[in-house]
Length: 359
Image 1 (cartoon, one colour):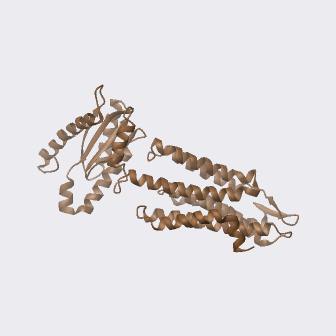
Image 2 (cartoon, rainbow, N blue to C red):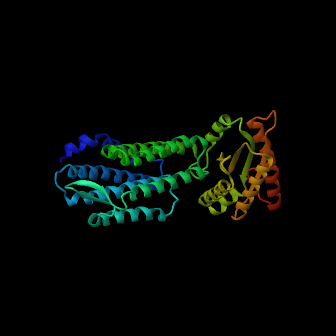
Image 3 (tube, rainbow, N blue to C red):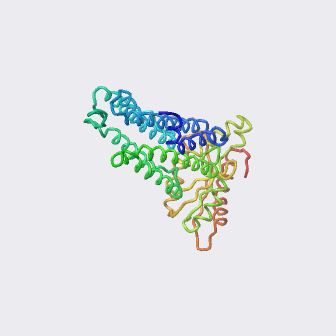
């Protein structure tokens, strides 16, 4: 057992993890919280390479050492915590209760060292499964089911996001199932697969940053132009939205308060939307929703939900919409929706006596 032997066995994973760590801490776009979460996952994966290497060393001895049981407990625990950390990276708003199954798994693995309830070593140094021998796989399976459920229920993801996310799920399932069939090579498969998946998800996050507005996290203006061309045949309606009174908020309360208002309204629009709605911030206080394969009643229902959500805030907005006609283009639809918005905006300023972008 030596450092050179360890590097010979895990060189590819170590280089990948170190390189990703360097890139992460030089990244100026990702939120600090996301960087820390990814760093934690990388650190646990690196620790897993070390403990797996040392456990393999003790496993090759002719006699049993208690250290092998300790390392096995650590490895079984780390696999689950690594999976939880990835779920938290993908869904950062998930609650602390997600850790409970992982903690229970870790406690039972530790208890297994003297009791053999999860694993044991017999006939010298041969691995065996106890009554709860598949506990870790069951817990990991539950986490994957949870991940997949959130994946398909999330409104945040667009259709083009699914291939990569589904690929991450499928490969994770494959590498976690390997110990059931190919124990001798599964540890390497797990480490390499998870390391590559972290890299791929990092690339995905960078891609998302180029598509989304930094303040509101809605899709940005460039995404609006791109999606307008890409989904031209699916777009049946455009909803134009403009915040009321942003100038007064900026002038009287400061631009920070204005940013809070813009973010609050964006959250309202996102909550009111569904999978066939794409919400964009295309300007300072201007928002657009592209409605895909939506009827007029669907659009009216969307607008009603928006008004209800915004009604629960101290802010207001003006809304206009236009349905697709035979000779419609994206520009003509937007102009028609903006014209209706203008009429509503005009009434707002006439009613309040305020002045604004169109007042």
